[in-house]
Image: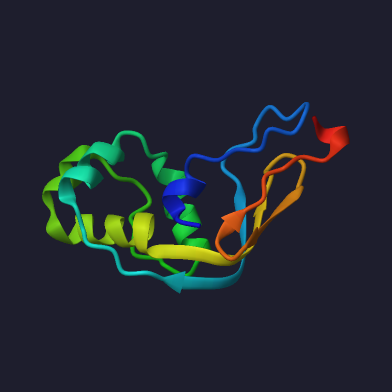
Length: 122
């Protein structure tokens, strides 16, 4: 699961008011090289919750993103490369996503998060 996906997911358990961002429990991270597309990154920047991305990348062992970012940084090739790597090349292969409010763990197996709710959570 890419951090792009992680940045778009939240916990939808009944009664949860703050289901974002999901915590990450890492068992296995892999890197999958992807060709960088600066235009895609520039368009996605406004849609990304930066703090959630930076925290998630750190939990996966990548600490190269700044704590805060603004659109002026998109002119830097070095910043774009780091943003690209965190967003698209880091993959949570095995582990779990954790609801910040309830602590419920959603398993991630073979890079696929299982966000299905139990009957009593709907």
